[in-house]
Image (cartoon, rainbow over all chains, first blue to last red; front, side, top):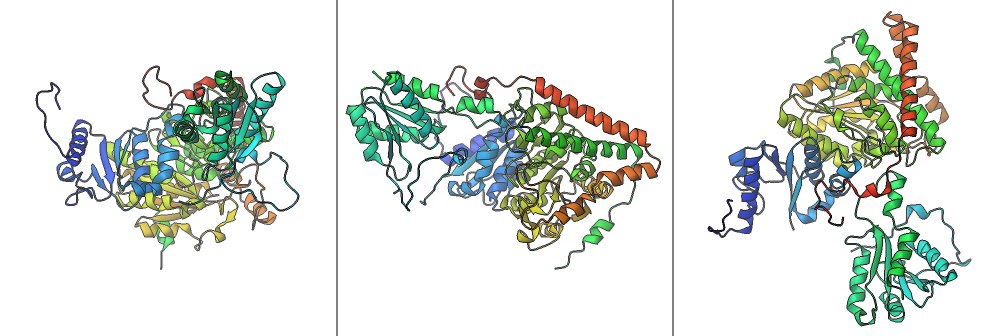
Amino acid sequence: MAGGGAAVRELQYRDAIREALREELLRDPAVVLIGEEMIDPWGGTFGVTKGLSTEFGEERIRNTPISEAAIIGCAVGAALAGMRPVAEIMFLDFIATGMDQVVNQAAKLRYMSGGQVNVPMVIRAAGGSGLFIEHKMMYNNKGPVPEEEYLIPLGVADIKRAGRDVTVVATSRMAPRVLAVAERLAATGGPDIEVIDPRTLVPLDRATILASVRKTHRLVIVHEAVERGGFGAELASIIGAEAFTYLDAPIQRVAAFNTPVPFAPDLEDFLVPDEARIEAAVREIAV
Amino acid sequence: MAVDLSRENAAVAEEMPDRATLSRMYETMVTIRLFETRLVELFNAGKLGGVLHVYIGEEACAAGVCIHLETHDYLLTSHRGHGHVLAKGADMNRMMAELFARETGLCRARGGSMHIIDRSVGVLGANAIVAANVPIATGAGLAAKWRGEGQVVACFFGDGATNHGAFHEGINLAALWDLPVVFICENNRYAQFTPQRMHAKIEDLAIRAAGYGIPGVQADGQDVLAVYRVAQEAVARARRGEGPTFIELKTYRYTGHAISNPICAIGRPDEEVAAWKARDPIPPLERHLLEQGLLTSTELRAIQDAAAARVAAAEAFAEASPRPRPETALEDVYAEWPVGAPL
């Protein structure tokens, strides 16, 4: 559409999407649409692609079997090799069957290739069970275990160390790392840290964490997963909602930087929170 | 169900490759063998990080297939991909540097052994996820067909991958669209530790091709000439625009799944390993070259020495290369990113 702001049209959502796809098909011969029942006479479940296969042919509007992994994987390969594919997943619910291609392939290939390749593709889509994750780097760690049979209930946090000044909630492998920082600071006259390992995120022991924050008035959250959209954000939101008036300082998050995990140890070690970053976050808000 | 594999195989021409071709395949096999033998030593000495899956014993497969590929053709491979990547012409120095996690590595040490990419020679990727490379190869085939320059795609995977959903989806789509992809199953009889009899009801995986409506051919993966012949027809068929072929190569890996795993897993007796080692693919080619008067023993030795020198030079290059600066871990996450914006 030409700019200028004079002419304004009213378009249905589906028509606006179709128009965008059509403009790209016209503009760039490398653009190809890949998905289920997008060709005429169907034109997609919601009619988004109606007319496109008639106009551009079935070489460019490619109808696929019900094969979400192949739709997304084929788009990944075509993009690596110079095309500009648009993959359509009929309903967002179905994307889980092709998730490896989204998470491990499309999202990571540029990074893993050291920037050699791009994956210029688009995925369009119309849009509770228990999980226990064992940290693979902790299989060799040792810790005290009671002699008798015992159960750790889900949803009960473990206060690893009591402290007065700052609450640090740390998950999995970060808990012993935070504990080391806490002991060092205590030995050198630094802030007195209360270290809490929530042990399970769902269910989450809110009561223990809230009680601690109401006592210390300061919270640092440490996790090894990437910062963006992580458990730290979830917990910060909970504390903000339920203990806002108790906080004397902004909540701090210490987490992996927002990248995939690189092969080189030099690079991976940089991304994962280390004791220096944890200590800096504590000192940032400690009095 | 009756699938006549012999009929498919009989259609393959019994033409003997020339001296130069045989020499190149010999050089490729020896190079892969020496490269990976050294990798095992380096891994055991603690010089390589991550996990190491080697290809020792299977070299005829990579050599006999990749000899038919041009630089602009594409290659997709698996976690056991060093041999294919070398056979496709990747720079050995930069490949070794990648395994050493050095900045000069093909992927600047972001990828490592299981994610090597060398776009300059069409290596679109080794892949750590079993069978994930199959639909990606289909996509590269789509791009090749669209470009119309006669490019083909070679996609290597193991017997275990043929039980994965992504394999079925990817090969079915390539067949449906007549894409120029050659799917090569290196059936080394084990999916990680699990023997084939415990992971598939059938003995000959090539018959699965019939279910996709494409040719399914087999060859002895220890016989580089047999591999050469089936791959020649499959690649030619793809270049002619007649669609994919599924090749099953019966082969064997001498090591455990990964170097840190035991060599003899469940159902893998010492005698079996010994029997396959007695069918090593390199000596028969040496004998053939000598008996046919194509190369002298001096010339064979020269090829071996040159390959050993390349491996040594690659190791020296890697050792001398700088480690990546930690803060560069934040680079290359996105193709475009607003200048100065936090990641």
